Image 1 (cartoon, rainbow, N blue to C red):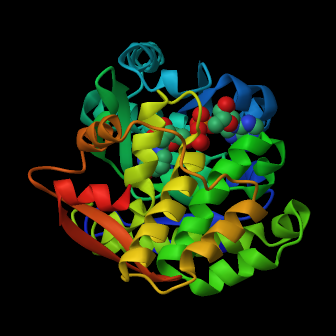
Image 2: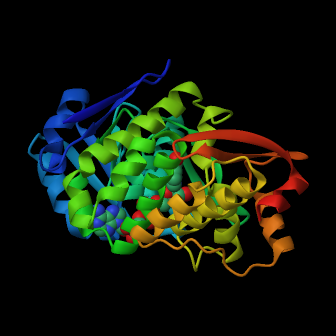
Length: 353
Ligand SMILES: NC(=O)c1ccc[n+]([C@@H]2O[C@H](COP(=O)([O-])OP(=O)(O)OC[C@H]3O[C@@H](n4cnc5c(N)ncnc54)[C@H](O)[C@@H]3O)[C@@H](O)[C@H]2O)c1
């Protein structure tokens, strides 16, 4: 089993990665939690596939388990769904000594984590991420949130789980589009911090070949995120590197109202496009954008910037909550595996569009 310890002053915790982990999750949780009550928040898809496995494993260890099931998809990161989750948790008479498990993709992780962070001023929680994106990104780092009509993740908190349990076998049932979506973020880690990972990803001739080494790939990605989170828990410096490709990616997602492109698909385009521009300006090593293009093609991701009105585009970027005032931060590559944050005047963004 791979283990990563996240060293945070107030909330240290560990990430465990192992194929088949879900089947003995009861044993693992017993090691770190001694009360009985556990509320599992999940979505319908994950419940249908794995609800019985998790419940059986927990009940075998005599836990008193309640399953709270939300609709799959981004629309569940809403105040309405959050309210229903609170109501079900209260009906279960949960207390601050009990445990919540967020069992699902990034939506369930963010929603369940936010419910855990806020109900009764905070209930301990564990992440069991089930999508690739959640296993390499959203379950690590403590960001939890829901959306408002005005934008994504506008109500949230930093609230770390007690542990993260990752079972890569669960990815076998993930829809190929969501797998690809997560792969964009895996590629991002290679681009910003690890040219070795980037090279490794280039060598897999098929998804099957990649899946044979998926535990180690997830381990590498989580280790990169761990470093960024430890250095910059509240996302004010180093952690921003994780936003490589996201400024343009968010603009694309927003422009198409989150309907045409998944997050990863939009980030993929953002990574290629911004690198193409920074290369042309002379900031990034020649040939880097081509390497990104080739790997995106290899993993079935698009790289070409969609037809978009530039001024609307800038407006969308301006709405990005991470960018404040007259300046904005963008993440650029020196070369594959080396990234940095560049502070630019807001108008200068046009050079990168
Ligand atoms: N907190 C963070 O740091 C952070 C970071 C990145 C993204 N996010 C958030 O994550 C969310 C996206 O996460 P996501 O891509 O996992 O979306 P998601 O949670 O909607 O999951 C994608 C789909 O896959 C299904 N699914 C999940 N696991 C499955 C499995 N093992 N087998 C079959 N189907 C499965 C889900 O039911 C859903 O339909 C966004 O809301 C985004 O804002 C958060």
